Every structure is written in C-alpha cells, then in structure tokens.
Length: 546
Image (cartoon, rainbow, N blue to C red; front, side, top):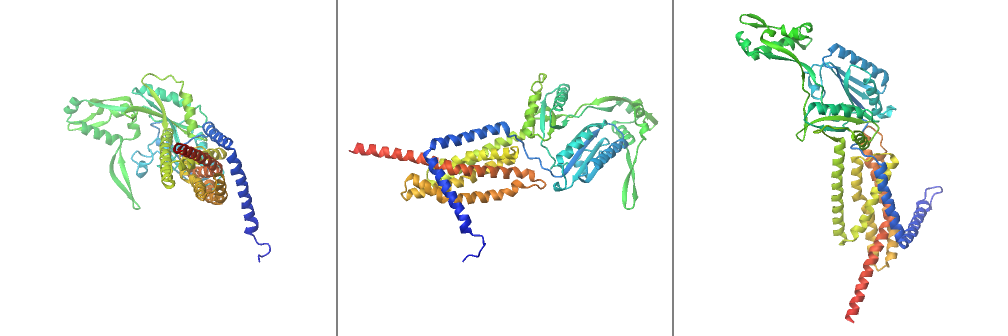
C-alpha cells in the first residue's frame, strides 16, 4: 500500500505519457492521409529557414571570448626622448587607475632599449614604444565586458597627440591575443602608389561603424643619417671601414667599459658621447678619429647625409603587399567584411594595384569551405553504414530526410539567441549529421519489424510510432540536457564553445519533432510505390504465363 502524499509515478507520469502517445498517433494518422500537405509544409519551413539564414544570420571566424586580459602597444613619434615617453606612460596609467575600476593588475613598460631581454621576443620595444597589459577581475565581478573596457582605452589613446599609432587587443598580447581582424590587402610594386591607396583605405575604414584599431602594416619612412666614407682619405690616414665604423658606434651607441656591482646585482657601465654632442649632422662630422699621426675629424674622411629610410617590404605570393587591418567591435566578422567591401568598391585604384579582403575573413571563408567538404564526407559515410546495415539503398535515404531539418533548427537557435554563425557553431551542425539520424533509425527499424510480422503498412507505421516515441524522446532529452550546461555557461572563455551547445540543442530539438512526422510519411510513400510496382510486375508475369 502506497503512503499518503507520496509521489506516484503510476498516477502522474504514466497518464501524461499515454496522452502524449495518443496525441502522436492521432497526429502520425492525419499526416499519413495528408502526405502532400505535410511534405509541402516541411519543405516550405526548410526553404524559409535558409532564407532567414541568408538575410539575418551573420558570420564570424571564432567567437570573441572575454578572457579578462587587455594588451596595448602604443607607438609615439620617432626620436622622442625617453623621459617624454615615460611621462605619457604615466598619463595612461593614471587614466587606467581612474576609469577602469575593473582592473586587477596593470603592467606598463615604456622607453625600453631595443636590446631588451626575454620580453622582446613577444613585444616590440624602443625608446618610443609603450606596452600596457591589464588583467581584469573575473567576469562575474564586473558589469562591463573586456571589449567595452578596451574600447574606452582606445578612445582615450586617440586623444593623445604624441601617439602615432596604437593597437589594443583583448588578449594577453602573445599567441592568445584576439586576431579576429578584417584586412584589406593592397598589392603593387610601386611604394608611393600602394602607400597612398593604403592611406585612402584607412580613412574610409574610419567612417565605418564598429571599425576599431585601424592599422597600416607598412611603417612610415624614418629619417636616418648615412655616412659615406672616402676610401682614399682613409688610406692616407691609415684607417679602414671597420676601424671607423667601430669608433663611430662606440661614441654614438656606446661601449660597455665595465660593470658596476651592488648588493649582488650587476649593471653595465656604458660610455658614449653626451646627447648634446651627437644630436646633429655637425656633431657627427666633428667626431674625432684617432690615427697614427693624430686626430682627424669624421667630416674630413667622409660625408654625413640625412635621408629617409625606405619602408619595410611585405610579400604574399611573391607580390609586394601592404595591409590595412581593423578589429570589429560589436559587429560580426562577415558583416564587417561586407561593409568594407561596399566602402572600397568605388575607389579609383591606379593600374598595377590590386585590392583584396583577407585576414580572419579569409580564414573564415576557407574554414567554411573545409567544413562543407567535411559535411559531404559525413553524409557519404553515414549513408554507407546504414546501407550496409539495412541491406537497402532506399532506407538510408528515407532516414537521412531528417538531416536538413537539423540545419533548420540550428538556424532558428542562432536567430533566437542572436548568435552569429561561427566555425564552432558550424562544427556543431556537422556533428548533428550523426546524431539526428538515430531517431529515424529507431522508427524505421521497428516499422520494418512490424512489416515482417505481416502487419498492414499503415498499422505497422502506427505501431512503430507508438512504441518508439518514448525511446526517441528519452535519447533526445539526454543529449539536450548534456549540452545544456555548455549552452548556458557564463564563465571566462565560455563564449568559444557556447555556440556549439546552442546549435546542437536547436538542431536536435527541431529535427526530432520533424523526424517523428516526415520520416513515417516518406516511408509510406516509398514502400507503397515499391509494393504497387511489385504487384504490377506480378500481374504482368501471371498474364504472360496464362
């Protein structure tokens, strides 16, 4: 005897399941007698979902994850004094202290020597370079995302006149930094032409809403001093190129004469001319070079000229290249690429100069093409396996009719959650090829069993639907519940894998609902036609024998 008030499985769950079975059977019979309406209806649903995907679903390469790290590389005017670089770095530190309360740790390096140590492997350094790294508190402890905070820092850096260019990344500044950029690649041999086009493209990109950190890869020409030595005059004074160049280097760059030791630490003692005696062409020409017969000025054995050093040369596919890149802010990668294409489409480009949109957008298109091949291979393998198991070429096609509606579910899930189609979400869609067919396999296999027991076709389909409804719902529910934590996660880095959970849940939910209807209907059509054809062939054979 059951205890009063105790939860009763028999009294609550079983009646609910029985009603669900009855509703499904009354549905699966109406559908069997209105096959044309069902097929047209589900086909329209699929076509509408494809249209929605083309119009409303945006695309991106990889989801941008809030990892709680911001890194900024700031370049000041070339030749600026180190103490001025330090002053600007302190201004930036003061801004961060006042306006970014979400910070947990801030690291700033400024005016570092070009021969910096281990950190030079991962960051640019120089007397005019400032590197800033900000570690934020956990996502749950702040209201703003790392992207919003990074954008506020960008806006402030744009107000400092001494800054030539800056690059703010939502990552650790190394290999894990965000590289979700759209690049306009400009090909051409002439430096002046391609640089002019790059500057024009950069100005156009500044007008695009959501375009941040617009960078031109080609550095500007820098003023340099070039010393041309007279070989005859050097020979007359008993000098050669190596001797003179070493003497100039020691006086301008410096010579490490010794080391100073204090409290277990060692410091290099660098000896060189005071800055006031190496600041101009005249100062350099007055550098005294010792010879066997006395001192000779550098200007007496050579000539010092000022010239602009050529820019760095980048190449891609053996072509000279300059790149204008931008980081999308609150705009999907594919949408930003389309805006850029529309903006630069009307530009008057000189002959011999070509433009193309690349960067992470190029990686996006290539990855989607690879996933398309992966999807095709998955479909072929699934068909081969089912054909061998069912010993039929038709049954796998009936089962695979449920696959397109998995993609419909993915599209609807992305629209409902306002999520772009990333590589991770598309990978979840490919996974569905092997997941969604299991429900159709269960239905078809049991229907074939009922047919083997000599049940009439409609009765066999009805019995299979009633019997297999619960296993289908249970397997679907377990998969969805297993993906639910992934789809609802909010921790650091959860943005990367969250789209996979969303796409799998949406695709599996929708495809299951459609599978329970469309697969039995298609099965009935195919089997009925096969039986009719077989019956007709039998009658013709009997007629011929008679």
